[in-house]
Length: 404
Image (cartoon, rainbow, N blue to C red; front, side, top):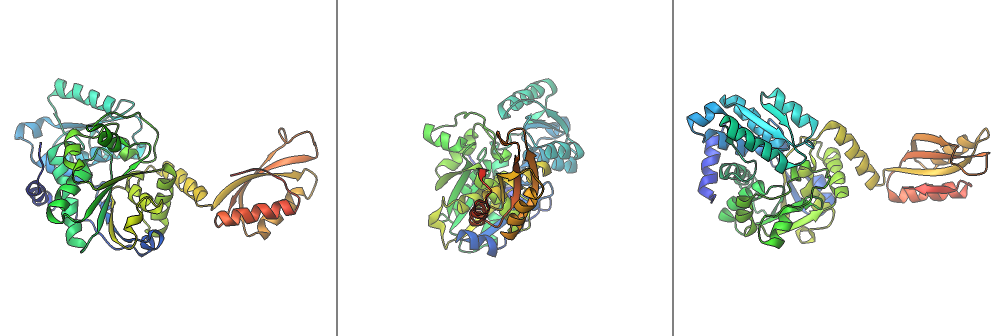
């Protein structure tokens, strides 16, 4: 199936008024840390927190009257489900979503609040899809694929039309890749209007299904692996999306989970916005030095979603702080006699670090009954500060058994 610029322009007219035109401002702090001239397309500002509303509304509006009455169904890890649920409610179309068991709890609960029937089933997208297909046959529902339906791809491409109007003289658009629906739509519109703009895709090393498809020449299934970017956790890219994107995407890079965590932290700190792992992947690729050719160039990051579970966000921030050298843990041997702990805390304070937590380990501290292991979690400025702290501790007679 083909999707054209005309389809994307028609989708934009169709969804106008139902989906916001999200902002795309320049980011001075992100430009400073990456060396590129960075703009952020904040589609996490959509009502349900992601770009998926674009395709969902476009697809729902094109259903036949009978299909609208019976309702629709989709398998989704969250954002497509949210988009369908929200716009289904607005358009009075019943929506059922089947979510795999790794779907974030916030997305499951929000779908229910938006009025969708939510079924949590399957260890991955393929198993969730199989359950959805069963309901298609049993209840006569219309299946709307989250990243391979032409109407979905055309709807996602409307983001590119907005970007090209909001930012002039763009050198590159960086987009995360999960099922490839977003990058396919972006690439179709961008290459038709501004063919010199580079379209760069970013995958997590744990979810590189597009890279696997490029190597095989067709979509193939990859093993399931844990990832912070649950929105990218698609084991097989869409066949339509892949065919539309493969010749239009200029480059695909894979970024590690540590960099994604750090990018989420940077977005919170520097842009004052909460993003999920998939939306942080473009920034992570720049920060990790995977795109050195973009130094000094005008780059748009598609900040495509902000639906991260708060519990996961707190863990991600801590992982980011560790990666950044701003949170560290070490084990020091101290005297178990009065004053031992006080001397340790004095040295830590004198070095400019701040103790968050201390745990005493006597049972595994060795044969010296007068010694105790003090497991310390400490806030520091950076990795150089950690090394400075370790030197100060050793200088004052505190052996460091473990340092992280």
